Amino acid sequence: MTIPNIKIYTDGSCSPNPGPGGWAAVLMFNDGKKIIELSGHETQATNNRMELIAAIKALESLERNARVEMYTDSRYLQRGVTEWLEKWRRSGWLTSDGMAVKNLDLWQSLVSLLRYHQVRWFWVKGHGDNKWNKRADELAAEARNVGNYKQEKSSSINFYLGVTWKKSTSSGSWVTILSYDSYLKILSGKEEETTANRLYLTAVIEGLKVLKKVLPVTVHTRSGYLRSGIDAWLESWQKKGWTNTEGEEISNKLQWLELYKLKQVYPISTSTYSSKQSPCFAQEAKHGDCFEE
Picture 1: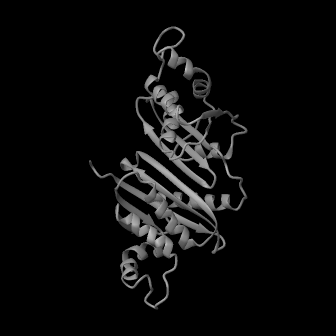
Picture 2: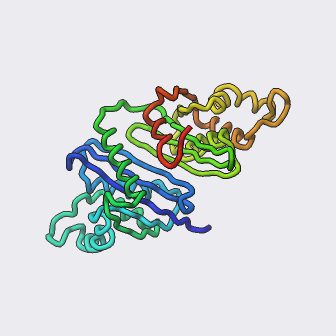
């Protein structure tokens, strides 16, 4: 099996330092055709801990061993791995001054992950011209700010969907933001020879496929086709052998069949909103590289 090549951009943020912190990672698969964004926060942290956690969370999210190009604007992280790590391990996790290495728990976690992945480390200038470094910085800052607000523990996962489709080329893009407690994951992709309805289905299916625990899922979307399909039509289609009221095969049968199977595992409900009163995450799903409903 071919080992995948993945580019990862990470960032960490604290304000004040130490204080509330946020971390983020942007993972790019298939030369950027598929992008996953991760972020989270801690109520008390430091910049260096957030930088380390961003790299750890990114590597932990990979389902199999990979060749990774890891980009960071943290000299602490980049030099720690490439220059200091082996010295620390040989000295029993002591610095050259004989002091205990700070953030030892995180460095040891990172060492364990590096056994499974081939990682090359690159330093990039923070707040420079690198598009994906800036995106990681934005996500980390947003996560840090979210962490400043007290939140009740959620019992469900929220999906916020965004889709764009061009009739002239039959091509489009989709984005799904997964929100659960302090954790955010953003998935996105592009497709050729497709429809807007199929893109909405893809956004939900790809979101469900990355879940690692079974919890209720609420899908927030303005797509009446998707809402009606999930809430009203899906069970009827399955009983009728995936045909409509006219006896014809339903559109997007393969996608609906896959969603039906996933719905047997995850309880799914839908929620709508108006264009003037959309949730903040729905607005975020419409932001960026021409993602809009």
